[in-house]
Image (cartoon, rainbow, N blue to C red; front, side, top):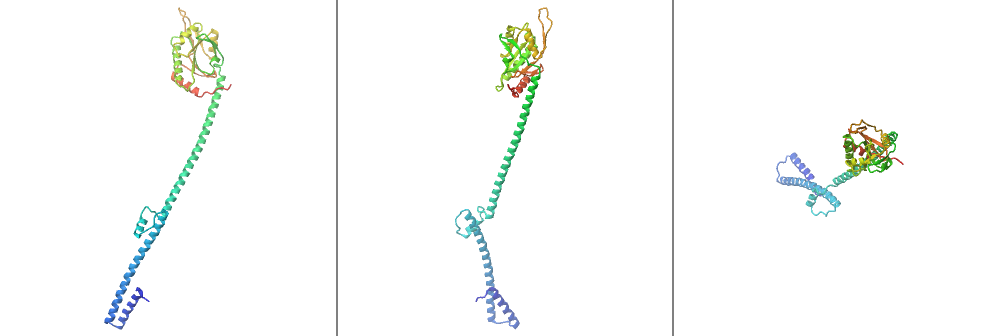
Length: 327
């Protein structure tokens, strides 16, 4: 049975010890055997070191090859043909270890799940916020509608423009308040012999109507001019006078009693002044422009301090917030 290298080392040590104990110093045969034994021990030690190194390298290469084959089988790559090729492919960054692949897949799955959760939260938030906004808008709208209804009820109780009138227009046709129901009306009381105030106010009224006409989304406004001087402002005088203002302006006149009733309905004050040598006089009267809704209700008035832009904006707001009265 062959001796292992550690057995040879033990034999060598025993021979040396016995040799010393016996006091044997020479001996060619012994020296030759001992030299051969020593060389064999050294060679065995070198062989053992070399085999250990090779075994370690083979174990490392085997583990790398196994890992690469597992990865390449996952990615459906071809078979291995050479150990160096195996080692190079296993070290290549294009073929990741199984643990790394699982980690990346797990990270991608977690990212997708997080995105889905985020989208769900955003959808719920938008739905909840939209519901709150819709509820707020509904309540706000209902509140505005209620406010308008209360405003209309208050206007009904105001004794301004509640009555009816029957007058002649500048073409000689009889007109009543009912003829203008369904239309927005701007109404001004004045007289044709007024030197400056009445023409200025009628110019402003015409400018307001022209401004509102430029907005196609708004209904047309009907301008009316009612005289407070029926003795001088007959049908012919009105026909000539209204030509200087807006083309839709209608002049209205009548008997002193009819004109007085129409003015009283809108709380208009009118008082003729003293006559001069030529029989001319000035009428002192209320200087206001009245806004009447399509329902025939007085809505607002504008004095001389309001310009045409302010009046047009006010009327535009009234139109947008208008609520038709039930029949």
